[in-house]
Length: 121
Image (tube, rainbow, N blue to C red; front, side):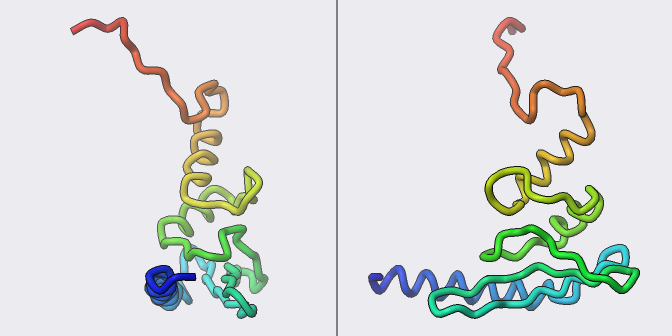
């Protein structure tokens, strides 16, 4: 790993740690975000746990290398705490896809569109 890559990696890690500290304890509709870190030899993974209003726990299937925003958490809860929809954990784009599918279940577009060229000026 070259010097620039190591510095960039450290800056990114520091920003992620700051985001994690800011979001720790974030509460929405009684769900309290309680992330924790698993320190391994070559990396650190974040587990995205929540305490539920009923006293239980639930885990958000989110990337272990990023911190969800407050808006991501709100959306995830409002969507019914969905699981992954692809080969990897959820991200912001997945939440938009899930919302679109729930809001427009008969849509054949699935988030895609075709540009109209027959409209004229």
